[in-house]
Length: 273
Image (tube, rainbow, N blue to C red; front, side):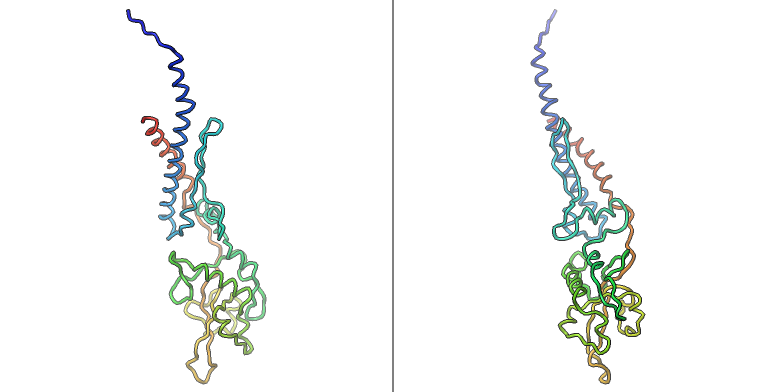
């Protein structure tokens, strides 16, 4: 008869180490790898869903590294919630993630706080409530387009500066003739009432006659019997109702699926080493 003797303490010790130290630490490392993989998956999905997203948006998918807290391994995936030089991605992506009206960025909010003079002397906000301004991204509209296909940030700033202290459409009435230097940066907001004013007949380019923001330019008059210069209006932004989005960027579904799958695979790989 063979007798096997063993010391339980020698077996329990390694098991306790496995349960208390190795498994939690392996879980933490595996979760960190899963969170990183999820970030890459979200970036790929953003490139697929959105049209030429800017790097600031792509880099806004972040995660807090996993920690062992109260005997649990905890990590977090989230969208950046601050924008030092612009708008917080968590806010402007929220309608794409959850659905709902488009986020009003700093520019349209600034327009609501800007008063302009219309052609008939009325003073109005530079944008009506419940609307948004969309750049006219076509040829010959005087919109400066950056490499991502959007209006340049410099032109947004220029428009706000001009509307807050520049030339209005009313300045051209009664013989008004702003200087060339003013017209270099002249923009005005025209509402529907102003657009129906007789003064604007034949003064629009091809993309005129809709409420929005217009760039004012003067050109030489080919008719020697008329005024020396002609004034033309180029619509650079169109005022339209705020767009409502359906949820199309599945942040939560993608994160749950990716983190769960990647965690299991990476935990198994590590624990079986």
